[in-house]
Image (tube, rainbow, N blue to C red; front, side, top):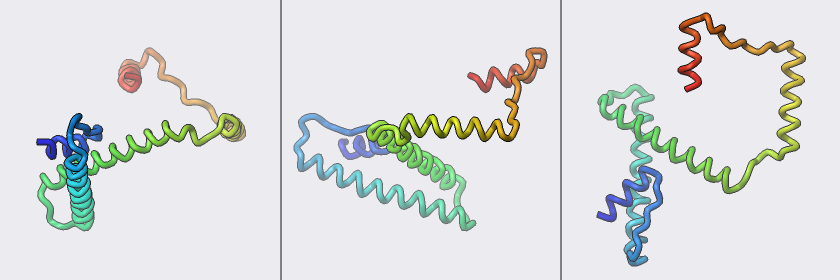
Length: 134
């Protein structure tokens, strides 16, 4: 039960902790999850490579592979965002101001004009704008 729960938590990117579980057993479960995660990730990349090469692959394998790769990407993105919050912003306020002013000067030098919002008289454009803002 703990094995499957730990595995589901890994896939969902949720920390897994059982209070009162002996440390050696917890370490065994974590080793199992790590091994299964490595296998799961390798299978996802292997199947992606087969699909890319054009090998004959079931439709369900394609769907599952897309789900696996999406889950892996989300895990990586969540870790990247967590690291950003932990390590702080990588751009200082002075650098940010310099980037902003450089961008403004660059746009002005090219006589950039902003794209106007659609007039309210355009029925369909207004609907699209509302959908985009929601």
